[in-house]
Length: 248
Image (cartoon, rainbow, N blue to C red; front, side, top):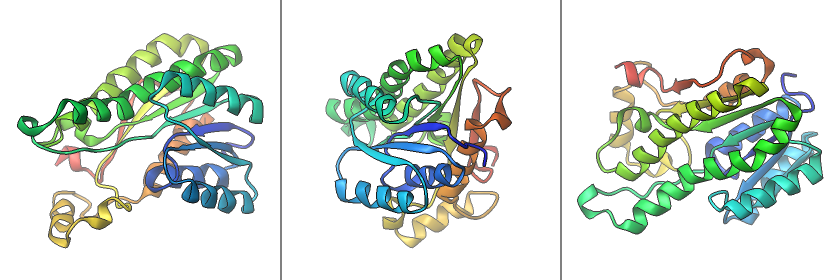
């Protein structure tokens, strides 16, 4: 197993891509601490599912966009599991509208949850990783952060910010054997996309060279690669998981 005995923090893991990453990591032997903000029922169900499969798993209610909560989270995880080897900054929201109609609150909420959370949790975990002189930080961005999208100025700015943040962290921490990479998913079929009408979904698929949406597992498997020693010489990179959308 590629992550045998490693301890991972995954934010926003009670559903969608985050849940798939948690499931994948447990299957690869990792001990998983995951965060959620609202649905304790979903969090406990995931905890029970993964524990039943043999994993050491614990869910934590935490808002990683708040520095104090990020620091408390890391302290609790280190107390429970002994260390932190991997961080997946996955928590994210959308609040879409045209820029002309976008409120300051819509802008601030998306930037805080999507971008500030990466800063807060990465800063909070640095001391532990620096002491160990190893670690892998993986930030979940989006193809929207690479190419933009009308009606998503706040989301695009947050996800583009993650890319610059990732490169800077890689440069700062590389000498201590701490790697930082970003993943930019494209159209991934999750609970969020299930509510879209059929014509919209088909339009997305038609614009993708592989002619289909991605699966959460496609992102999760890339996370395993970037978290494991298989990618020991990869840092500061952004890898698109988009079926070729960006090259189309």
